Every structure is written in C-alpha cells, then in structure tokens.
Length: 249
Length: 171
Image (spheres, rainbow over the protein chains, first blue to last red):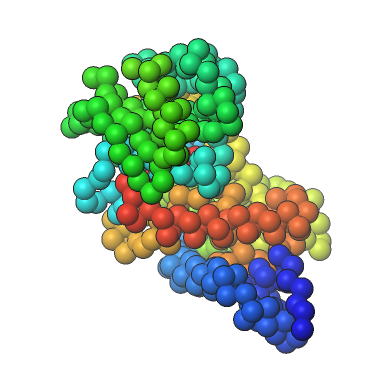
C-alpha cells in the first residue's frame, strides 16, 4: 500500500486540530509509517499546547485602553505617548530582546567563546537566522561593526587573505552586544569572525583553540575585546581558520 | 456619534490585543500604548473595514503594523545600541514570570517578530490560516511554509540552548 505524504497544510491543520475524520486518519496513517516525521509533529503539538497554557495568564486589559475613554482622550497626549513608546521599543528591539529570555540560560560555567560557536551554528549551519547586514564590502562591514560595538572593535583586513565577506549579525550577550561577520574562505566554506566586549568583569581570554561538536574556535583578546574565529573542524576548515588568524592577529 | 456596539465589540478584543502587544513589545507601557493606538485607529477607520473581514484579524493587523512602524523608526537610532543594550531592562515579564519561565517560553521570546506573531495567532489565538494570510497580506501557501519555519525555529531554540551559553538573538 502506498501513501502520499500529506500536504504541509494538512500537517499543520493536524497539529492545530483543524482536521476531522478522514483527513485526520490519513495524516495519522502516514505518521505511523514515518516515525521521524511523527516525532517532529508530536513535538509541534506539544509546543503549541504549552504556548497556549503559558500565555493563557497574560490576558488582562487596562482601563486606559477602553474605547469610550479613548474617544474622550486628548489626541495630542496620545501622540506624545506613542512617541515615548517608540523610544521604549527602540531599547527593546536593540537590547532587551533576550534581556530576560536568556537569563535562565547563562548559568553554569561556560567554555570560552561558546557563544561564537553557537552563533556560527545558527547562522552558517542551521540558517535559522538571517543577517542584519548583507554585503560583500569589508569597508561597509567595518563601519557597521564600529557603529554598533564602538571603534575599538577591530575588523581586520581579510580580503587580502582571500576571504570574501558575506554579511554580519548582532547578538546580545551578558557581556554586551556581540557581532559575527561571516566570510567565504574562497572555496565555498564559511568561516566566522566573532567579536564581543569582555563585559564589566573585563574577562579577557588567553589565546586558545577548542573544538565543540564538529566546530572549532580559535580565540584571543586584544585588550579591549574578545575575538573568535569559527569554522568546521575538518582539514579545510582548520586551514581556513589558520589563514584567517594570520590575517587577524 | 459614538456607537456603543462598536465599543463593546472592541472591548471584548482588548485582552487579546494586549497579550499580543506584550509579546511584541515586551514592555507593559509600550504594550498599553500600542493597544491604545490600535483602538484609536480602529475607531477612526471603522467605516472603511470590510464587512466580511474578521474583526479579530483586522485589529491584530492594525496593531502589528503600528509595532513594525515603531520599530522602523526606532531603527534610525540603531547606532545607540552600545549604550542601550547594556542599560535597558525590559519591564515585562515580571520577575515572577521569569522564575516560572521554561525553555519553550524563552525560545518563543527570542523568535523573530514575524515568527512569534504567526505562532501566537495560530496556536494561541486559534486563528485560521486565511486570517493570518490576510494580516500579513501573503498567500496561504506562504503562511504554511512560514509556520513550518516558525515551528522548527521554536523547537531548535527550546531544545538547543540549554547546554549553551547566553547567546541571544537581537532583533
């Protein structure tokens, strides 16, 4: 007996409980034969259920937003308030995003520059995130980096070493804003240059190398920032990282 | 002439709008301002609303656009990042909420705005795919693929970062 995979629409409709009778049975029959897909779908259902439960408590309203009151309110005052809100949003969109979200994640001891490795994983391997800036111009990236981390965050000249810049992305860390610049090593492999302030504790790193689940990180510090070069831990990646380090330090 | 039925219809939606605003802005004052501006706009534009369009989708879409506009304006000052990122603390959720927060909530909070919105609309609000397509002004097929991406991202983030350092996605 053959089964055609259900459409993406049907899979989601199944997760969200929009399917009835026959359609639901069909999806279930398919999932029974495809355990790996079934696992994912099961996780999606759990996530959806959890979100519903967790967000159920956030339902409340403020009397200030009551329509009758808003009809009476002064328009000018509201506009002013919205300008303030925009300023608050600014701080949130820039710094606050993970402000509380990751608080629970930071506990425990951390391997050096583990954030650089995770950034590489998210951007270069999983493609879970987009870039904040996409450009092949190293000068633009240098200006972008200086504008966000300050002039002391140094982006070396790596085009001379054969690297082609692709773009960059900012991350918030407990030590302050960090940035990752992705390069093509000239042979289609991606190597990242990551820079992060040392934080208020001024935790500067000695020069070192380590590997973590198939990725390697070379790290060092220049006295004002911590840096890492991350690549895939194979021969070609090692060679590219060495080449980038020569250009960077 | 104020119409009490309009006010009543809006009033029933306020808690949902505010919850959405909180999860967008993650600041109670900003969320209230967003809801307030949404209601204000809804009142002035009530006549132009299409009859068959769901009120819920219409209001969510107004709020979503107001938020994106605010963010865009905020982006003009992006170079202030260095100072702001260190000093500003979001005022929501509260400390108690943080204590109870789990991996799913943390992951949800760190998703990009659009993915967070899509998941909230579909899984929490129970909106139809068509309503979401209307809000985002995209075909329904695109909603499906973005929903897949959002669900995978949520999974990845709630599975992933436990053993990992405090790396956060800046949006």
